[in-house]
Image 1 (cartoon, rainbow, N blue to C red):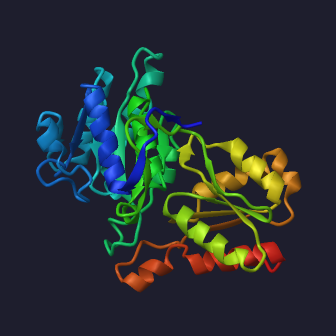
Image 2 (image 1 turned 90 degrees about the horizontal axis):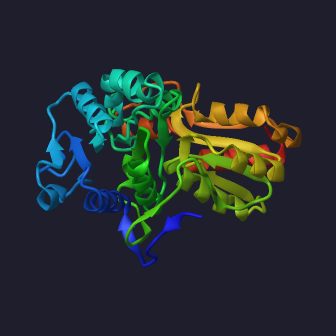
Length: 336
């Protein structure tokens, strides 16, 4: 069960839910502060930090120079000293500039010092395609960081989970990477008031079904749910699992679902090769659920290409609802 202290609920956007989570954390714990490029007066590249600089001041909502490596290094160092920084990258693609600090320092410091220190840093990554930002500003790199022991990697798909998972991340003793799909920022949904957390490492069954399990992440959860509704009119009953956490991955929820439905499809926006779907597929192949499969596992991922600028080509490079419908239909009916 998610830990909810106050249960009053209202509609917030995904971006508002994130902002509220940061405000609650800053009010509850003076060690929490924000860092990032243009997050102060400007309010962030996607206006997520909003007016937090006016509420908490520039010492706790800090505009950083245009150096992701430097900013990440300061955030990691601050975390080691006992603070709880939240560092925003303008685009997830810019994680490539800070890999040394993320992969070689944040992820390994607790291990290399025998547990003498923890690194409670949160890094936020606006990710994904759909905004016409082209190849260098539209990638989904969660599998990169999910490959690294010592990091926790989460992908909230709803405003409720965006707030609850962020609050859980801030309170976690280890470095947590949050990938927020840019197209979700304006999505609205029910969000409880006050402080609550959603457990890191626990998937959520968004829709129960009997014929096929679709494991999806981030925005693909919503596309999978839309596809499931379409297929329900054809008598095909789809179970949709929102993975929520890439690392640590919730094996048992996926295994239990596949044992029930006997079919599995993985849907994710990142490039198909070596993506999250490969790990989910291998997990099932190595588990007792493999003997329950009635058909080969199917992966729907991004095309083997950089994200194009042209909007029609951009859409064509990542899974869309029609493609999910057709692939699921073929898998259930035996056409694949």
